[in-house]
Image (cartoon, rainbow, N blue to C red; front, side, top):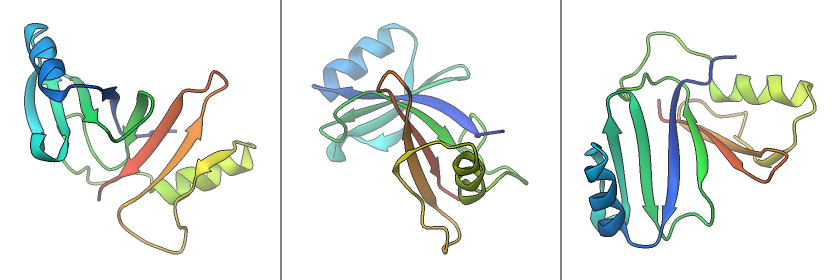
Length: 123
C-alpha cells in the first residue's frame, strides 16, 4: 500500500522558536504561512511540518498523490480507496474521508500507542 509522501507534523508551542531550532539542524522552510501558524520545512528528502495551535499531538502524515517534493504524481491510489482497503482489514477510523467525493480528502487512524496517522490527499 503506497501512502504517498511522508512527513511528521509537529504540534509546536512557538512557531518562530521551532523554526529557528530546525534551521540549526539544516531544515529550510519551503511552504506554509507563519501568519496562520504553520510552516513546512525540508532537509534533503526529510520533511517536517510545524503547526502552532492546530493539533494536540504530533502526527505522522502521508500525502497520496504527492512525491517528497510536494509535486503531483501521474498515478496514485486515491485516499478513499486506501480507506476502503483499511476498513476491510478492520482498521478503526478517528476521522473518515467522504467516499462520495473526488479530489482532496483525508482520514485519520490512531496506532495502538495513541499516535495519530493522517492520510491527507491534496490533489
